[in-house]
Image (cartoon, rainbow, N blue to C red; front, side, top):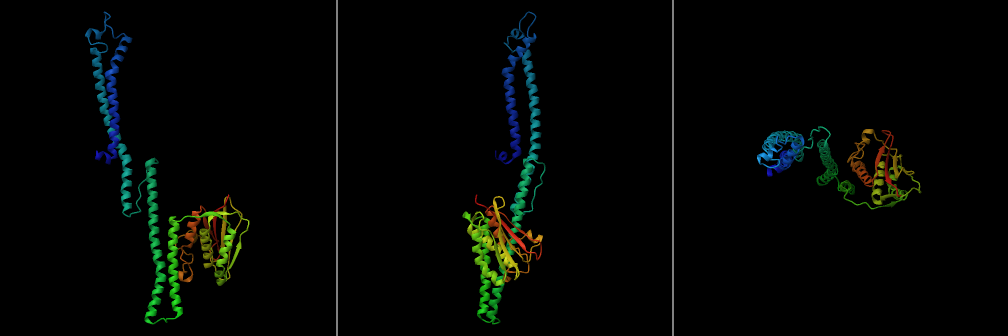
Length: 380
């Protein structure tokens, strides 16, 4: 019984044999009980059931209705024919079960073997897809799952490398300052300690950003969705960021009408999105440049918010990866030069998508500025 449970081919063969057995039993009892009466009735209807004197052959033999010697020979012939038929049917059942077992079991075994290799870390495993039936669809979905796992593993390795690199920069700076202080190469002045404190703060912000990214991408937070007036929210954010823009001498403008409909959003999370976009625009806009945050009439059931700058612009290759973790348009920028953690736009994308909106970037090319836009559902 254990062997049968573990082998699909045996289950198919047994199912075929059970069907044959049931059919043979039905035929046997049919021949035994229904055939005598039918045989006699047909003989009488055709005149073949009477002797010259008018008596019945079965009556002369004393065997009763439907039990003459001719009938017994006929029934024996029927049973012999049924024996040949059952034997042939069993051979056909075995052949068909073997054929279908291979057709069904071979892809399943291939997927089972591939799944074991994937479990061992070989995420490049794929199975061949033949046909378009349910097994082919299962194989296609299996390959799609394996591809997603491969992509996830690649992103995990890349994330570990990126995090290691980002952590190494401030840690190396802090270590260098401390060694300089210990060896007496650097003076123990307030400026030196300020540099150490600045690197420690950058390290702390990076850890906070990574923790926030983990919560956002895993969805382990709850959105407090309620009607929000975008114009009021933007005005508050602009007042908060105005000193930073003034220090860099970048002009910050608002172009949002006050009569726009309210959107359904988590106010704190959308504040984080707009803050990240404005901070990114400030980072990549030179002194004397301009950043504008704007919105217009709703498009369908969504309200669009756009942050446009006159900064360094984005090439098409960069635009395709702009929302990836730790991706920077200007590779020369590091955290020590105000490049940020490189995951602010990734967090913004995850938050907007959690609101069932979308976010994208447009740019005419290098030194042509860029436009970041995102949509939010309006209150209806």
